[in-house]
Image (tube, rainbow, N blue to C red; front, side):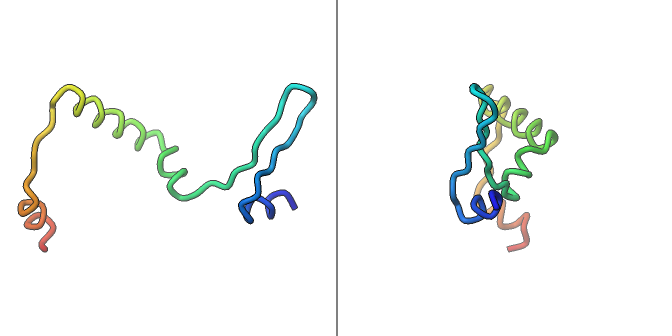
Length: 69
């Protein structure tokens, strides 16, 4: 019943004792993708490269050539 409510975009809060509460939320494919430790590590590495200026510029026409477009 509670999961059906979540599927209908309803907010479901479960109270456990006086001081604990939990929110039930649907997980999407995107959430699963970003929860992958390898994906997180690669994103962190890429962000560090960008912050330290270790990036390259690629022209739009070069990308089209690489993709065979």
